[in-house]
Length: 374
Length: 126
Image (cartoon, rainbow over all chains, first blue to last red; front, side, top):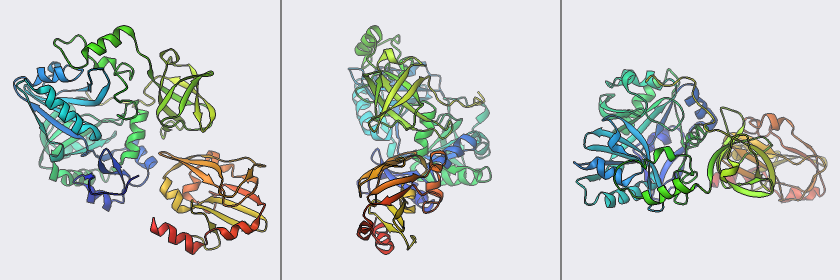
């Protein structure tokens, strides 16, 4: 944990978080709330009711121009040209060797206008890489990361809390879709996306409007028990949902196939794209490690960096792990040798020099009972 | 306010002395810093402790922290309730959240620990 040196960015909501009693930490170059009342309580609020997240630290990169679709298709592993206007896709930007630079969501806002959302700690890197990769195309990048506040409301009650505040028809807004409209009278982009495994929305507004949107959602959701949620519960929620976190499951030494995200890579798309050669080779020849879910059976919690053994052989390493608030057992994600990755395989996690038994299980650990109205 | 009758380590353990027996736990300050405690690993009866040596770990949702023995001695009991209810460390750190009872091998070691006023000063500064 880092004290607040002045080179850290802070969001427009910092004073709101402080007033809410948040504990603040450095994350990805930003001073962010890690918890308000407590990680378990915030986690349960999202699973049972709804939680409010300040995600203004994330990078918002708008790409516009006659060639925007083709240019992005050459820059990332997915094919944004296949998106209908108003729809989104999960994607990744990789280095020429196939290593992941960042995972992204690409939204199509118009025929020649896209929004790329990058992780906070990678936003500048992604912005620079895109500028470089857009060179020669009729497409320009507008990095609005420091001009955009992003507030999410996630949980089973999210839609019913947001609906009265917006002219966007949430009933017809599908999962991984985005619409322009008003929220609390302010111009906004409303996306049905999230990082919790629950139904929910991410709302993009002008930077200085962040506190207004936050207050409107907090007021409207107060009777329903909406609660602010920090990065701590955001991490346990996404881990239960089996979603990767850049820096844990994804990095430059990892390719999308190893992360179990080969479906995101569109090798069949027309045209060259950065990483194609390396990714085609990996698709042909196979992977060296494989991301799996683990449920710890013995006494202990598997944590980031703990070794994983198959018998006497080191097979891999834990990338994320915690006590699952929803399941009540220790869960983890880990990279293991491909041959040790089948569900049902028993492995050992080295927890402080003791071997603790764990079972390979399919991801995600948690799936919500009711899909969002689509 | 921390209980005035206890002694404290700079690592945020407390000790309650009753004759030759010491009861050991972590402070409310430590519990709050940790957040929701979800797992505790404690030594079993008969384990020998060295003053300021590690004797176990406490884990919150987010973090793992070592526990340090305030005094040397032999464990006579560890709090079995904590296996099922580690959250007692958050809700009642000086009571039901106690961790170990230890027969001290050198009761004079208690004198080297912080008293309540010194411990409060320490936590106020951090």
